[in-house]
Image (cartoon, rainbow, N blue to C red):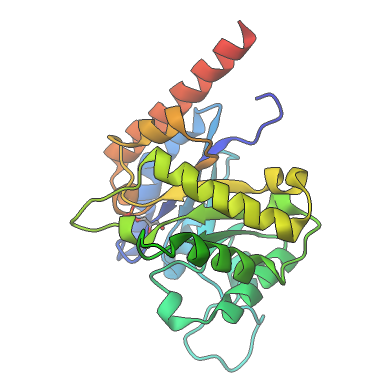
Length: 265
Ligand code: 13P
């Protein structure tokens, strides 16, 4: 695909799949559809308990496995934690970090230590940032978050980093209040500008992959595909609904195909 990485849908199952049987069944039901796609990839992020089991079925480049968090030290007296090394040994290649649903449990220093540890273990961090509301300070909040996650991170392989913009006000709720592609693009501009100060060149920032997440589904994903510069999506609520997820994969695949077709014409 013109040397571009595939578009990705990251399925963050959160704590919504509660048995090995369900985890396996859900993954297998999506897997067959995803294996046939040419331009789209799924990163499945089950609860830690089921990472290993799902990873055993993830034997195709189109579907890979990630964790929902990981502790930066490899081992030690850390009751209840799952280390980056354990995550890797279980078969994860990606780790979601700094998710807003975990931020009350961790400091920004913890998050950046996790990012560094994940990179050191040759896995890909999917770092989540996003403001709490679109008040008058939202851009400053976002700029600070970019500084906090990137300042200490090694700068040499930005292509190994994924940054997900997940505004807290848009995440999974009964309100069902996704950001629009316009709001995403406004945020992306802020994020890229701030990242450039840290990574020094626009070229380096272009290598980072940027995702959108927050109340996405098969109804609103097209807005982002058509109107936003987005490398993929981070999906929660519908990530364990195979029917909706498959429609979303189809929409992404068709969109990329059309785009390529129009370029080659
Ligand atoms: P929803 O898709 O449920 O809004 O969740 C987004 C999210 O938090 C993914 O990490």
